[in-house]
Length: 295
Image (tube, rainbow, N blue to C red; front, side, top):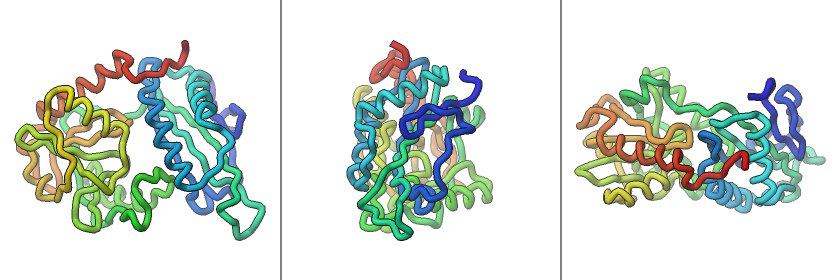
């Protein structure tokens, strides 16, 4: 590990203490920025191309014009991890709309700030939570509808995520999920959600971020012969579930033992959760979809 974290910012690799952006950056002033998070495990970055695909979609949809092209982002991500001497890492890469020369900025004219930050790999839950499952609260807040801000924009505007998370923690829960405006289960601040009922794996179909780990677990379930249905789910489906787990870049599957005071029918983590999580980590250990940090 480097003595001080090295951050990529606008073409330079700087110590964290020197990696600064302007207070006039539109990413800070307006939350006008997109990002993605990818992870490395045992010297291999998992599904880097899939994360870059999603990042490029966000860039195009928000009409950002970064200096780095796809290959440039790829090279800089690998180099940032390498310079920090991480084998296991969580890597966040960000493009903001940059600093405007105008007080009232024309968002069509932008010179994006480009940032890549790597840190030691993190899990969403502590050892106890990963071993025995966590408790979820259903927030009174709702996810953004597609006609306001499509959840597929992976943007840095996370205020409602933070408010929902604080609400859950103050109520004694470990994490939170919210519903869409039709009352269907959506997602959590940093994860997608899955339900197991009668041997079938269910997950929300629309109104959610298209998580790379979510798609990986769907792929693994199909490989294992488990039926998968992407469909609308209500809180009732969670209350009657055999198993529930969330998925994220930060740890794969995380078992849920209770939602809004209702325990799952099967003690967490259940057999399907354990099976799929084991397959996920085997996929990573085997280097499938991996990009080596040091060739």
